Length: 161
Image (cartoon, rainbow, N blue to C red):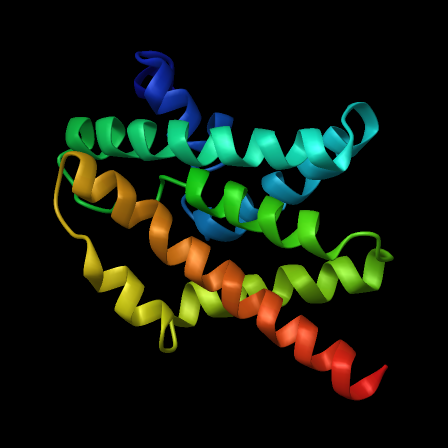
């Protein structure tokens, strides 16, 4: 907790504390992202949420790079801002949908992010290290996981609805 509050980048990258758990921090961070997206919808229009996501991507690259550097780990599992922004992107582009649809989108995103099938594995290995390259790398594989999730949902909707 002390580390998270020591620097604004830590607070952002650790998902406002959602990534501090010992068990499945990425899943908890994604759940936090789902909840915060539902709250964002109460106060912002879809276009405003799009701008929030775009800004969060840029801020996330910085925050993840700084936090990873301070943790001395290239891609720490406790950094979950990438999951938060990834699930925001999926939900933003898929809404409106009911609870079951959101749960399926969440499960698909977690599958692609955790299992890392191609091309997510490629994206995960593309940018490694510290500094700006590491920050982009932490965020990039989750964007690709979000893209795979969106493609799967689009194909599902096209062929079955």
